[in-house]
Image (tube, rainbow, N blue to C red; front, side, top):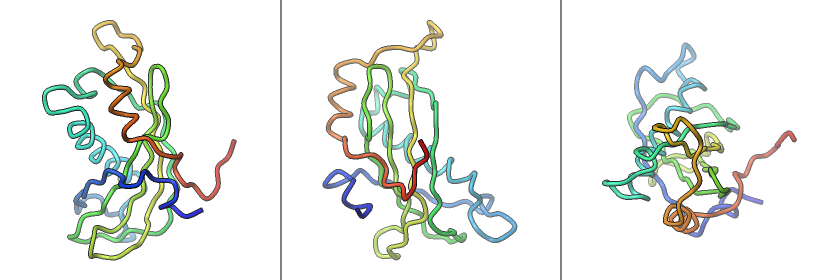
Length: 155
């Protein structure tokens, strides 16, 4: 199954710029910096998905797990990377976001990483997890697709 087979018909995508400081001693984007690229895409995505005035970032959401499969080295360049993302699981108090990190349109077709992030909804005023609101569930359902297309998963 190809990566394209597991995404929604038109996955949400964000072009994320690379920073000079993302590069490691081998002139590649450091593996840890991929988490920042995913976070940058998520922040933009949440604002677009839930609106400027109300975002999950304002309500409270915590990362509870990341899984990344690095497909090929990503050298530093001035062109951004494209992060396609969709919702791969919706639960009662959280959800997962799947990603594919590729070249932007017109730059190439390389896949650099496939990833998935588990997110927990959290009420910071109560310092406790919270249940998902029906309107949040409706937004996430519109973005739903399959799990991230990892080559190999350990269970």
